[in-house]
Length: 446
Image 1: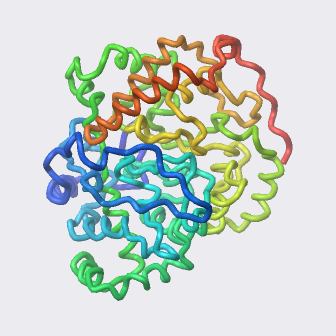
Image 2: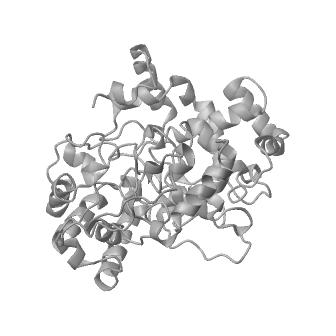
């Protein structure tokens, strides 16, 4: 599919291309990020007492903007999704400071970085995120890395831009808990450093619109490539293991991963590894009485107010309905956005509800075509008949997507998950994996 067609909503004049690349180079750290830093020494997220918010991550080296000088960096694609104005160094620096600013939360304990910790590849390491007052949400925190390439934001795609995405957690009662965006702005408006930075970045004082624009500008600099796989695609034959090479072939053939993790089904995608679409893959839905929840959502969200959808997605059982919350289409029940796979090794637990602890669990889920009793299950879900060695190969390929900043933590995480896979495989069902696809029940009336 041509890039211009796929990103038609983001028309761009070719004349901006040189400016984009120049600003990327000027505003991003040109030196390669170190493979080892104090930020990479992480373990499981700390246990929290009832009512306790997670500790605030620090803005260490891994929080720095990324360079465009990365093997695999999609120069042509990037020109379609970045406006040069968003990459002004003063705006990016302001956005980075705001990303770690707890005063944007209702009680000064939570920041954007609480759920998007640079040391954890901009995730939080928890099945579902924990916010202000220790409130536990319904969804896993996706990485911010490469979010600039997302056609929509959030698991259900309820907004299109990073500016809109930055706004909603600030007022969500289970995330940052401010009464309003204006309330959050008021808590930093008197800070002289912020007054100076806003004036330098935007030519006016502290305000809501520019605050969100700055956060989004910072997030747009977090492009993450340069993985061993990128070097392999660039022609370095020995950049990845033979197992990972076999995994890449399986990914695009027998394992059927490319049906969701590629821009098209008939052309290999070595860049984003996602389709920017939504799918019901049978995660979590069977634990819920979905039809009554869908009826409840139609009543409570009939007006389509974004704030109400956002609250329902994070705070209530209705969250399981996924994309249906936005579209109200029955075909979208329990469908969630396909995530990109870069740095997937270090961004677990997996899926929208964080229900899978390892990449082997993920592969076991797909291998047995799980969720077939789900009447809204995606048509492409079916038993795969992957052998154990083939599953190992696909996981080896996924591990090769780890960027150099996370190499050491990725090596440790791979060893941890591999050891876990030898003793605990709760999703494995070999009989189902090698059996025929069962008949899927029809959707019930809503």
